[in-house]
Image (cartoon, rainbow, N blue to C red; front, side):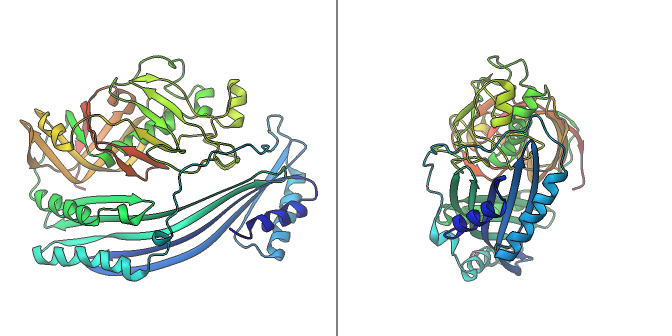
Length: 442
């Protein structure tokens, strides 16, 4: 954002001495969608989003806009100042953050990934389509790429900027009444194993034909990385945020320093040099720090922004979301400490259980215990005597995640980087006593 510093200075001047914070994001994004083995959509967009937050004498107001020309800036800031005058005073409102030294973080921008052309995406879709046509299968999914830059600046002299590229490949394959799914994202498109993703989805679809129905009940489950990551992300968001903790709405309350989860589970948030890296600063421009949330099942810490840290009489960990935030700070760059062996080893060690490829329609029921419900999808199999015995119809689960991740029996040694809430590096896992409440036709 070569000219964003200039844009910010213009906004600060228009604010007429009122404390002012600007969050600006530019995003270039392109996607190719395919269905029934044919490309059905090719879209691209370039966007700018500006958010201006004004503070004065305990009052605050916020305006959003998507144009950076002088006239648009003038109208937006004038509207913000007018709104500011009508707001009630908030005795707990913090002044804007002062500049602090920021860690370098990882370089997450790859120019080639950011600029990949439509022909490249079409070629990746065509590779899968050709393979599916030969076997009578049909594929749908997406190939995408792009880049984004985020700037956080304020009138106290703070200016922080971060850029990252992204690419992703998501595939669902149908084979008569069977279906299979696979997906991968990365900052560098060259690191995405397109052939493996296609092969995995096609093999699962073929193996899922003629699924059988099983009775609801508690089963040992082997969760592939995406399935495990989806559940763990809810556990992290609803358990380890400073606001929920301060308000007594987290299962972590009163349990810091105590063992509440499986000793096989260690979970950290580390955007700087962790396995799921991201911005080295938060949405207040403060440095992010590495936070160990769980260590061998022991609850170690929660994440804070400046507001929740002040209330908890501790230091911010640099996890602020755009202010104001009803959720407060949450961990967004999670990594599960890998264990040993492969997914196949987890299956081999299971006498009787269910292999889950993917969950969908997951929703929180009781935040205090992180009780959730959802359904399996695109590859669910019965395991018997250490091998995949047959495909089964999809099941609905209703399960508390605190209880579930207290019964981790094994963790594989092969984590996958997954986009879930923010990002999470997660291996496959085996859990005992997972509750499937009913079967489903979906």
